[in-house]
Length: 222
Ligand code: SAM
Picture: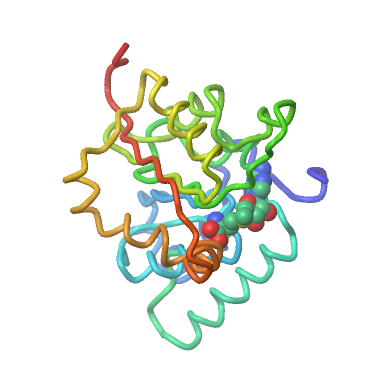
């Protein structure tokens, strides 16, 4: 349960030095300004983070994962990559947390450039929709954590959930859809179906996917 994992009381209390020791360990004077800019919510086994780590080597990223064993696995995986590739994978880490409760404990207003929700759990039953990681209420929190121009990426193989996430984003005043040209030009979009373990499973089975990719805008649109 929630009581078994520590949560920072405020984003300023997040222990950067333990998550990114090479970046924050020795060179305090140059690193103290840096903050996490990408968050992979419900990161599972960490495939996306690992792909992004080398694509954006200067960006700090965090995976947030509820399951203890999965989180420990991702930790080990990152440590092994750091050991095997000196100087690389120093910019990614993982925390065990409930992202539906604690996003504001980790990120300040406008801190994030990208948030990922890849193949989230569907929660089919109507009464469980409030447990979905995308909802109008949670989008308010994500809009708060995202910088203006920041991007939220969602993808699922469950059509109903895809429709749900898209309609929540479309009806939210602080988000607008990326154009098809922007989607084409964004190298990260290609990773949504290829980089995560769940995405690979869906691709192996020839499954269809539904994505909704939106930008945080400056002024309410409607
Ligand atoms: N994104 C990964 C992928 O594409 O391979 C994992 C997808 S998996 C179907 C959904 C993940 O979200 C699971 O690992 C689950 O433990 C995690 N999760 C569910 N609810 C969560 C929550 N409230 N906070 C953090 N993680 C959560």
